[in-house]
Image (cartoon, rainbow, N blue to C red; front, top):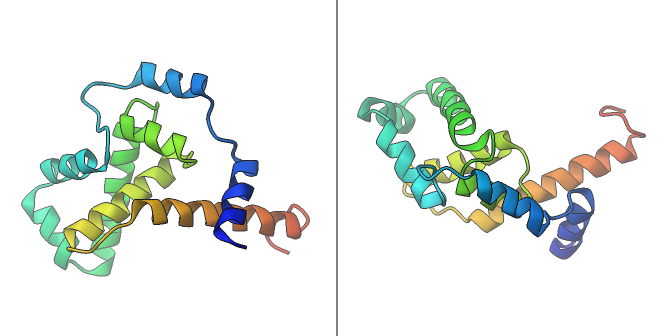
Length: 148
């Protein structure tokens, strides 16, 4: 599938939010919540102790995975559940509809920045949409069951 075909199929599966739905999200945004990814990254750095950041950079793969899991849950629970942040609105308006997926994307970007690597948010959201489309098409191809 081409990029355009993937995005069109994604919009079939998850139609974009209407202006009314977006304004409902606006009404719930809390003033102290992050409004963009720079604020997310700054907020994470502000909350993490230096020894935790060191573990994220130099720890074992198991330590990194456990920290990533708990950090992801915190991001989801504090910033994303309930739709009360600008970054939640950003994700919803770009087709990322589940807070777990949102926190995963935030963490991907955070870890890339922490390690001095680039992070292309648009590309990451496209990959998310492509994976949703592939999952749905695989489900349909398998007659509505996850495993054939």
